[in-house]
Length: 340
Picture 1 (cartoon, helix red, strand yellow):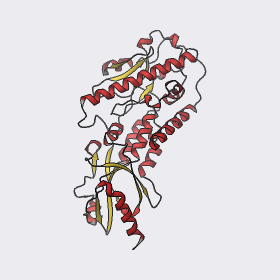
Picture 2 (tube, rainbow, N blue to C red):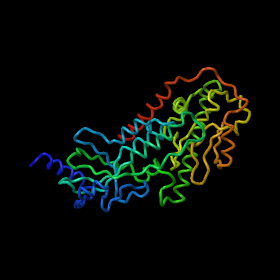
Picture 3 (tube, rainbow, N blue to C red):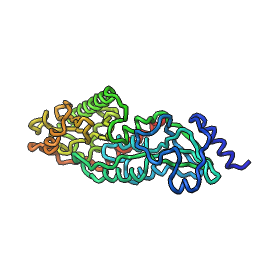
Picture 4 (cartoon, rainbow, N blue to C red):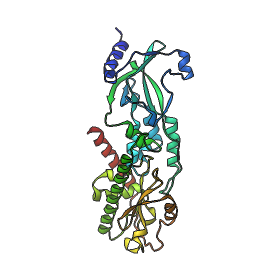
């Protein structure tokens, strides 16, 4: 018996939990034309059928998931906001399968779906086009899942990822709420986001108390997060739970400013969500520590007044290396989460 058959047998055993069915026959012409029978070529994230589970595949050739290089190349694991980017990187590493196989050209293939790298690139380019923490960013295309047939004899290991669910896939990459999401779960996400923002705002106030009443003179949101992290002691609070991919941003208009020089702290933005929710509102934390929901029309006005006219700034900026230190902190957290 050849090594290839042995490997296929071993992979079959690994696929047993996924209820692998008898392989469907596909002709060479079918493959060339992109005709995969009952399997859709492209799926919206919310259209992923029930029964599909997240797995990480490793290959005998030593190659890795091509999505990994795309994520690294376009900085999705390093986008402004950091933690949200780390979540995208983690979820992107998965393939989705229910164990079905197809047969063609005398070979058997595992049917999987992966995030479409072409659409991911376009989306990443749109997000990374904004190099500063401006109140808005161009909307990229909604990521989709694309079918990938993986030769069974090339698979070395199949590692289940039960902690990554379809709902997390949609909430991390999707546009809009998960189909079938209840009003209660939507409200719970909003409540959790407000709670996170309150903790972030309180942590920043504690920071200013220790640093002569000055906000960190940060050149980016990640740098501000890094110096604040010791005060909140929980990296997860820097995350928005908005399914549209919103991130929490520091108001660069007050960067390095003296808190006491702000005339109206209750009306001056400290942190805000980069994207509005489906109801048109976004959560905003103010310099006095309170958080409230702001309607789209009010945000349009508020976002033009992010820098207080009375602001006095300190002279010493934070080291540029703090961006990298924040990314390291995020990577360490993601590593612990994957191990635990």
